Image 1: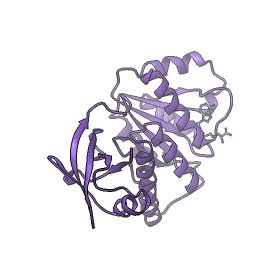
Image 2 (image 1 turned 135 degrees about the vertical axis):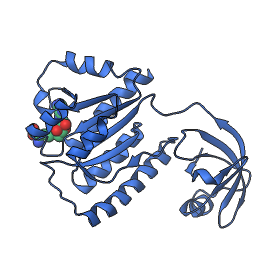
Image 3 (image 1 turned 180 degrees about the vertical axis):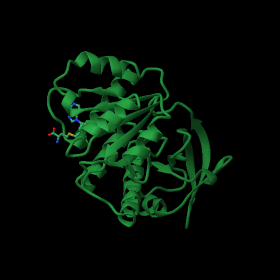
Image 4 (image 1 turned 90 degrees about the horizontal axis):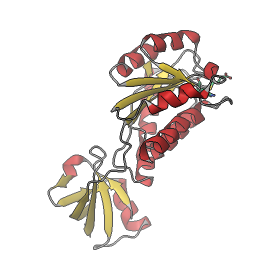
Length: 247
Ligand code: SAH
């Protein structure tokens, strides 16, 4: 079943409209026709609106058949604070963690981030990243499109994360530590609503950043004995959470 996103305002009672580049895709690539069934989400409430295509013109007009309430979303919202890394790595992080159910991604300019973005560049990158999140959300039939925040510094990242139920910081210097701590920290997220996960950039965390995170109550964990690349670390945490929370 092909899955699309539309603005919440385009879902009115039993009538659903799809616009933009999806129209051409539906008509010329997927070659769907009136009567075919598609699933639509508004990207926010996690619901799946199953509907039948009524007409295909400048927009695709559909009629609601039923709403699938059961959600494919993780039972907790995972806010991924990713140390800013090179463009293609950032895109990999966004694509893969979206497939795994991340709720939002906050790119954070950290001390050892190799890339520095000025405001103009940062804004255009974030627009691109949002496109990657939407495409991945569509592909994995998510009910929610992960938000991609504008790039922020470590202080504002920690301030934002302080509002969540728990902060987890996988730390490369904890790599050799006992796994009991990792297990304990991961288990403790059950039943929570919002957790923050901080991942260092290619160069890793600066000690001062780990101190600041700890001062904010973050728990550092090992992700195993090997050092993972920054783009592997976030997806590792997410896949453990899927196993822990969905099985
Ligand atoms: N360049 C650094 C590694 C950075 S890895 C070095 O060589 O030591 C990038 C980020 O991934 C780290 O900051 C950490 O958040 C995470 N990470 C990678 N491997 C990890 C591990 N084994 N345990 C915990 N965190 C890890």
